[in-house]
Image (spheres, rainbow, N blue to C red):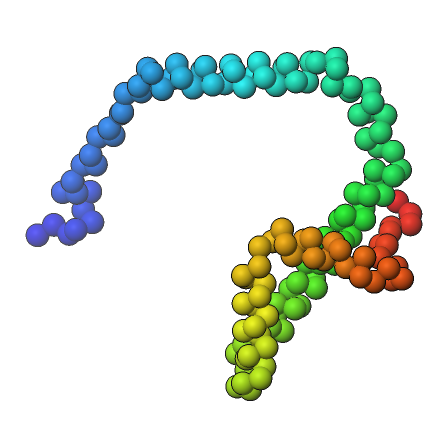
Length: 141
């Protein structure tokens, strides 16, 4: 009796099925690629785009400082969000009803309020507290 792993009695693999390409798909894909290239060339080749101005200001110190500040603020917000999320999750898993209630209300508010409203609210905090120093700057690049 031959074994199941015997290569002589093993069934031959099924032949690969080659699906013929639809010529309409090929033509439509080529048209879309050509159209995208024409649009990109018309944008990047346009003299009115002002590539000299972009080149002059792209690597200026104010732009590089803004990029550094954005990356620093992003990093700090990621850490703060992770820590706050962990604390809220632990409060939600707690056996204390007040902690569970606070975590539930917090998540309910931040899930229910649209992001644009939250952005406008936090942006306008500077109007409510004008004497606070809200600047975070990287001094040296």
